[in-house]
Length: 530
Image 1 (spheres, rainbow, N blue to C red):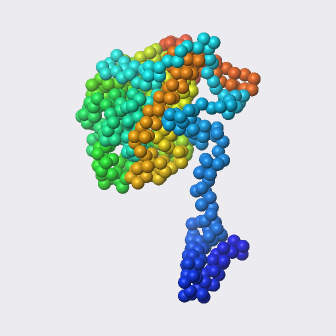
Image 2 (image 1 turned 90 degrees about the horizontal axis):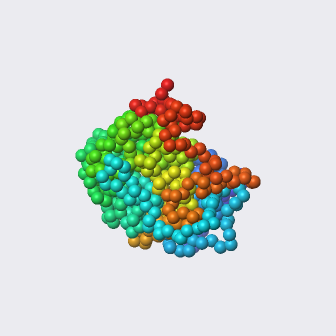
Image 3 (image 1 turned 30 degrees about the vertical axis):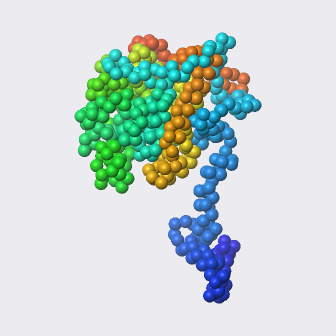
């Protein structure tokens, strides 16, 4: 009977105060107790939740505590280094740099430097003067590119309007304009909010061909050429897959297609919009290279590349073989790690699909080196890039530049509430609710985007100067060190395999993983060569 005590108490109070009516003072408690009694009876009768049937009224506390748990954990219980998915220490670093506050830490490191996996940069006894971060740029564009782009080594990763609010897009793009770095549109195409402040854009084209599609959802070269001619569009990026949900398409329900989204994406209202899992413009590595060449021609010679999260290694090596066979090369490749996460995805995809960024980056770098193509193609890397050390690590493993998504979301106010997919973002970043997104003040947050970028690169310039380097492009695997046991540390150059130039093109290569995958790869198909 104890589990029914709250319901019985509510019913008893209702009866007791009802007997005292019509006394005015008895009305409020009678109403309150009556409501609780009705709620308790509804709990007893409802068929969906066993806890509420057995524990009417008090069973509802379970949902209350579950809803409060994430906030209580984040603000009261979470340790400084617990990554869920970003630690408080990481978020605090971004907030401080975005606000242009001092991010120095007193009294030494909070990191356990003797745990396995601890990493650091080996400094030099001959440090050099700190370089100007404004010089940390990389030229992108190969021999067939007539409009090359000088990109910052730290840019805003792909996040679409629709996933982010209009004010978030405005703030990110204005910050990119202030800092002279690039803003990737995401596959949702170029919205009016991308254009307001004139920041450099990387136009990402996914399998839905938003902004350059026919009514049937196929690629439209005429519409593409019209959009690509905009001087604000500096590079074109074909999205083959993304780290958050590699190999997965999507559906935008008709009810969510506003007039604004319809105009931006070039899709009709009144019916569901399908974003397929694969492209219709190409089906083989050879066709992909031809598509790259077509986009470069249609864009007037702008840099064209593709982004992917590495899965089956022979498929990427098939692309490399297609490059060799056609002599058509992308100007760049962006490696998106499986730990990427600006797009909401099923838990199984988030946790168990896609190669992590470091392994993916090393594989792409080695494959291009082994095929003798690395010097002709630039590589970007994305996947939980937050700090100057994250940038240094990626560049030491082969990246020419890096992209960050969630880092810049923190800069514009994200508090990691993990409500991105609910349209109820508490700070107006990941929502289309006008009332919620008004909380994000564009001018203030644009300044924060600018300061976060600038201060992070300033931190990087100080780190590499201590290592005796003048530019991040000089970082190599022997500058990075990892602890592998309590008594042993190793250079990255000792931990990882690095192929020799053109090694895959000779029959003498004996690298088990790379040689086997290379033999399985085909230029004419993504299928295995058997």
